[in-house]
Amino acid sequence: MILRQRPGRLKLLFALRGSVLPAILPYITLFAAISALVVWVDKTLIELPHLSVSPFAVFGIALSLFLGFRNNAAYDRWWEGRKLWGQLVADIRALGVEADMFLSDEAQRRRVLRLALAFMHLHRCNLRGLGRDGPAASWIDDDALVTTAHPPSAALAAIGRELQGASASGQLDGFGHKQLSERLAAIAYAQAGAERIAATPLPFVYSLLIYRTSYLYMILLPLGLLEQAGWMTPLFSGIVAYIFLGFAEVSEDLSHPFAAKDNGLPLDAICRTCEISLAPHLGVEPPEPIKPETYVLT
Image (tube, rainbow, N blue to C red; front, side, top):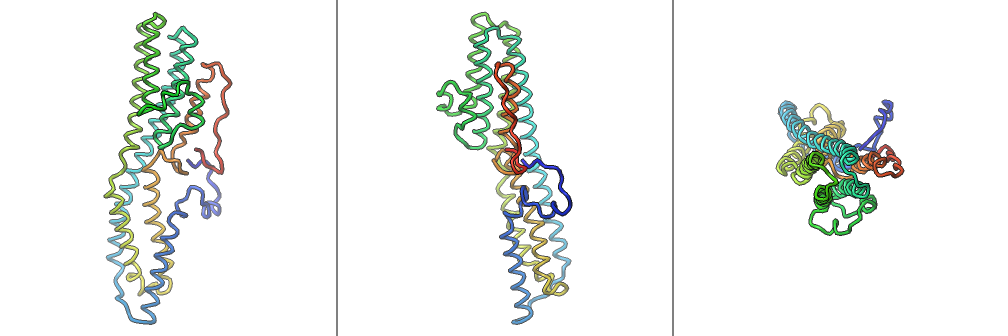
């Protein structure tokens, strides 16, 4: 995720980090070149049809409305993902407080909280399609967790077994068991919500229709600009391509909120926040927060 103060107007104009321009620049260049070729053919070889700009205006409005709809749908996915991970942070912090209140055995309390941090990292890795990485490995005491079909759920199940064992041995009363069980259920609910977003992308037909329609519009647009724009047609075609393809690419980025991209959610930093929050309950030195590098917080 990009974190930076709003730069001055000149820097904002030329800022590339977090911009979709590098991804769409080849296509902008392609459509500008097609426009230049159309103008050259019209001026030197054969006069091409000079269409009115009115149909392109109507076509452009319809396309922009559909792009806006898709962008809203993509942002809703991004924002829901952020809310679910915010809920996880709140639940992990509450779990630390409740573990101190209800679990009398210190070793058992530490196992529960370490498993909670292992769950956060395994959940992050699962959403990003990664294996166990260094931050996750540092909290995993049992390698059997990562050999299961679904490591994050295995970590939650291990916490449940710890709570059941504490209840059976009389170290956890009925009210405490109920409270901690409800906390685990809330964590599992947020986990399922994030996995639903990751496993259910926007319908492919949206992307197909957006890009196919945008390309068709860009190819035909020079015919509507020939009469009035002349040799300026490639410039205007490039600007229009930047607008439409830029919106399409932004929507594509936001529709995958957990991807390790510049505009993805900072899952590494959120997991580190949980480590900092639980450090006092574990009796360890809190780690340093993850800071943005070149304005990107991972």
